[in-house]
Length: 250
Image (cartoon, rainbow, N blue to C red; front, side, top):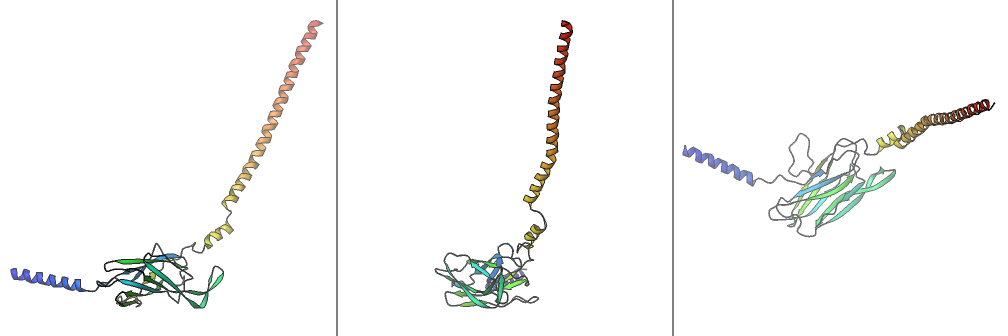
């Protein structure tokens, strides 16, 4: 029994050594802050973990998809990092808000001006992007991570559906269904077909005034007739008194 327990303990210990010695599965990834809807704009975070125990990440390059160029790419300043935005001429101009865009951002590079991402830490790099394509379900951003010992890791392998994740997968942004008002078309359509609240209120006021006017006229007429009746009644009383006095005098 003791021999069996010793063998089992040895097996568990050996398994633990294998697990601990396996390489970390963390890699450069991209996630939206909220949703990334087709045709809309979003803020996305490129998350960069440090996978080395003896080196710091000092540079990150994110290559933007050329098959779906984005007309707006705005990096958020990250303390301790310098950022450079590289643009390239488009093979086919983009139509954005009634004007043509002939170039788009092809790469964003962050370079540490200090220690960078030290072992045991990660860093997020936020970027505002748009308009997201309406004819795609995802966007692939190939990334290059550089350490201060000159080691370069290329996260450029595109994951394939139904296959195991590659050793160095590229960050993939999943796009959600388009929102109805991402271009503001729904709002403008309603405005052209339905009266505005101000117009409805004005119409209601006009109707109310029209309904009140006859009541006001009737009320005024009743008051005039009432006054006339009082005057006629007073005159009748006065005439009767005078007629009585005349008979008494006679």
